[in-house]
Length: 78
Image 1: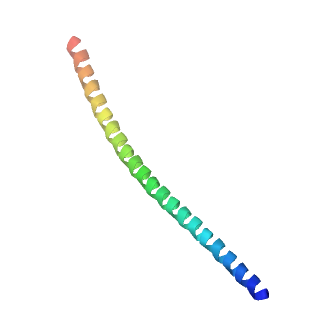
Image 2: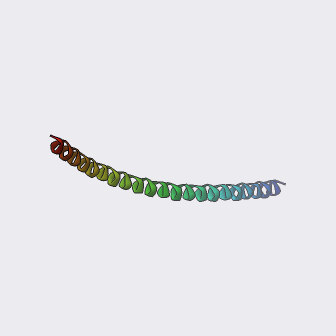
């Protein structure tokens, strides 16, 4: 009888381990998916930061041109 109890307990432990293995695989898969998504977001953020820098530089250049043109118009009118 004791041997049957031990066998039953061993079977139960195997089922539990199999269940835990499945959960671990699912969690690992989800973690990998989240890492990939995070990498995508980081790359997107870097692209946006680069674009923002270009736009700021362009704004500075255009502001400078506008100031020059404004100064020319004012000096011509005087």
